[in-house]
Length: 248
Image 1: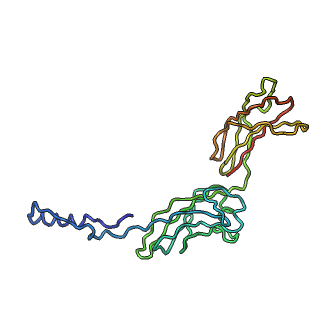
Image 2 (image 1 turned 135 degrees about the vertical axis):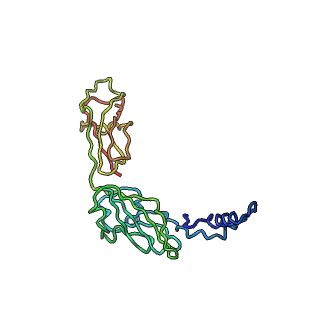
Image 3 (image 1 turned 90 degrees about the vertical axis):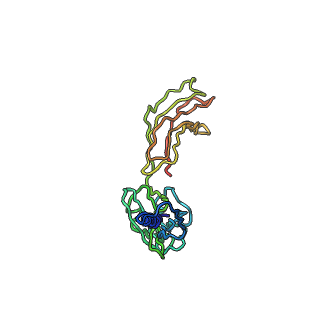
């Protein structure tokens, strides 16, 4: 906690007073526990978690389904607290406070969206943190650690950044070839999938091979090169590569 008092003030006054009166060489013992150090800040709320219809969605990204039912920010009650403030940082960087006297904050209540979150504030990452006020001292705690919830209603887009036509003579069987790609999402990508398919409908299995090397995800844009291995005994024919991205 933080103190508003100075525990050394009384000791300094004693030493200064005796110095002015010509007292030199005496030892002074101070009982620190008897010195008033002021009021400490209350503990900040902990264990923040966001639920959608009783399912934990903390630090994930949801879609328009968030607007149905209930979305609640829960946190542990702080002993002695009689008031809480929840601050949300919207995707555009602006902030807003929610005041309440209990240890949860309704973001969507029976499909009624609080303060236009998600629907009116747009797609992106919403960040939430909480602080509390002690009923006895009137002091506010520091902010809690934040949690996030994303809102995304658009599918990712994907495109190739290298040639899309490859001749595959016998030498490519049981061999590798690479394709470049660019995948983008409004908020955050979870995964990228690149696969090789056979266009011949007479073959029982149209899927041929997956990419086993790809770029990083965890942001809203991913670029990279994917390497696909052509299996041995692959029949002659026409094949195509498909690329797709999945958001969080």
